[in-house]
Length: 378
Image (cartoon, rainbow, N blue to C red; front, side):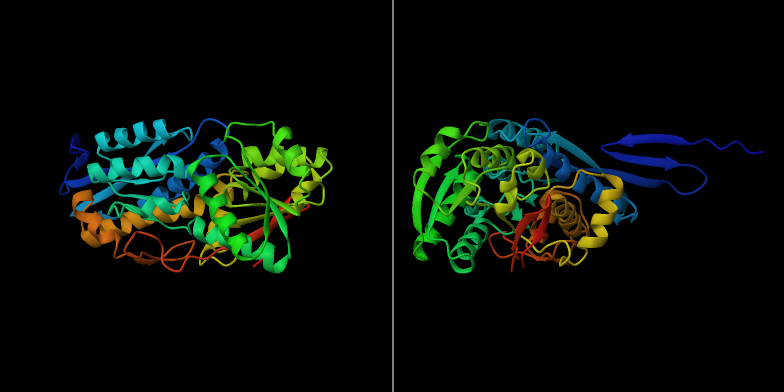
């Protein structure tokens, strides 16, 4: 029997497998993912990372050849802990590591400062979660968003409160983050145009758990509803404390930051969960092009971990690779220019971008909770 020698050689991320057949080059291409994997928002981060990992597995199953080389994608997952400074440090780390693109970040407060760093090093990033409109205002050619921004979310909730529920007096709380403050400002502006009174305005932080003082002040104003700009880690305890203060009939509004499965657990049995109306910047899973089938696969791989954004991080990964394929290059200097020409149908929607990097024709869905489950209203 003839002895066959195989040599495994790695040069600049390229692996060559040599034998009797011609050498086949496999180029390892790393895609960065950033979200909070530690802290009170870790459940969002795990969900987002799962979506990217699932996309990379599906892409690798396609045995893609780009630039004459077989490509194997790998994830470089980073934790920004929902902290702007850590988010900026992680962005610089990914630039220095020369990853091919980035999916993320989760929070507007981390994504906005990171976007400048990515722009300065020429690294494209696609977020499926950060919704503050200011993200795309600088006009960076490296920044893209595949979810509706807060202008849609805040306004949609305000219209529903005024037109469908006929509410007249609403208090607003925000957590002072770029996301929470941004979506709350849009909601406030819009309810004023609808003739709804701003009953009270209070502030907290994205680390707080005790809201009794601000809720007691709000209670004295006898609002029909409370709007909270922030995340579920605060909204859950807030719902418990609203119930403790005897405000069981007060509606509770919020953006996609509270529109999770986790909020049911965080509310810990409070009946006020049934007063929640929240919004997501896309179609419901049932109305997404591939939502229900994708969700079944996700649940099989990551049981009990689904929150909100993983379908979008899945699509964001495909958006990056679709541009690479059309450019026939994994080099950000080459393929970034192709991102603005994106025209693909993903799991979540038909994805195309306007000149600022915002998704064209974004959908928005309102949700309520019944018996511990989230249901779309539209």
